[in-house]
Image (tube, rainbow, N blue to C red; front, top):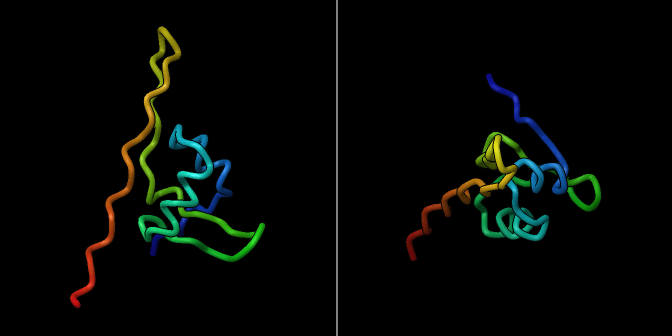
Length: 74
């Protein structure tokens, strides 16, 4: 069984190349799993896409957002 790679929101933001608020929004929308509450909240890094950094220019391309969960039937 694979264990999640749990990181803080700021670490996840660095990994994805996106702002911390975006990581929080993804968790609220159900795109990524939230583990814990308050300052102890951690996010599974394997659910997010890594940023790309051009080796010549240093330009950062953010990773693609995780997919939205499927909608529940009404």
